Amino acid sequence: MTRYNIFIFTTFLFISSLSAATLTFTDSVPLQTTNFNALLNISKFDPSLGTLNSVKITLLGNIEGDVRLESLDAQPSTITWELKAELKLLKPDTSTILIDIPLVSGSFNAAAFDGTIDFGGLSGMTLDDLTGTKTESITYTTPADKLLFIGVGSLSLSLNAKGMSTASGAGNLLTQFNVAAGASLEVIYDYNPIEQNPVPEPMNLLLLSLGLLALGFKMRK
View 1 (cartoon, rainbow, N blue to C red):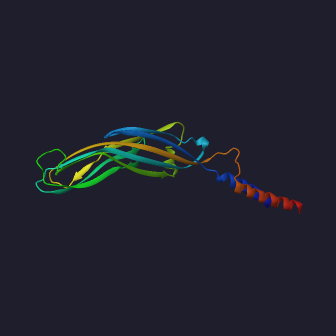
View 2: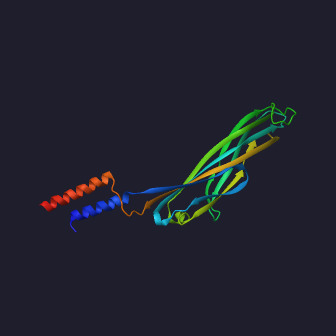
View 3: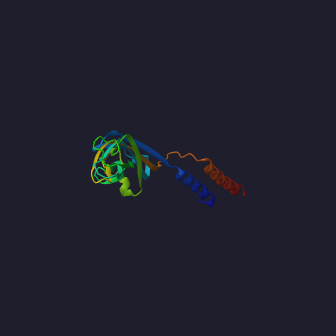
């Protein structure tokens, strides 16, 4: 094989190696009162499509809820609060993939207890229809991590949602939290497809043309 033929052959290899593709699968769990367990289902990567390079997993967690606080202290106090939930995405063997904690937080200056437990007035507070979101992601590139996602059919991942709301600041404090949580899962497979008839791109066509011109010039000589 001459060096010109080698150049053309290498150009074809270069063209074939450039192609890459992605597949995206999603699933979601609607808002519901914590604590709960749910399943998120996504399709596995079919190895007949090509070689899997990486798996990117993104979990978008969201919460919605209410906060009610009442200070029973005899002195004014500053109360801080967090409405939040822990969303834990698990593999079938229960090992953790991602932990997402969406939250809403704030504070208020409570006066001395006004004598009425109504989560209002000067010593109490009520906040309704609070919302919060948080996104966490991870990318798997090692063969051991990718193996779980390779195959035919679907893969079920568990979602554990636990309420974790807190408040502090008063020595005598009544709290009431109502929180619902939900989540959306996105899994992106980045892979090199098996190409039966690769189509050259414009730049690759230019390289191929240069190779053919060089070969033609050599044959004319």
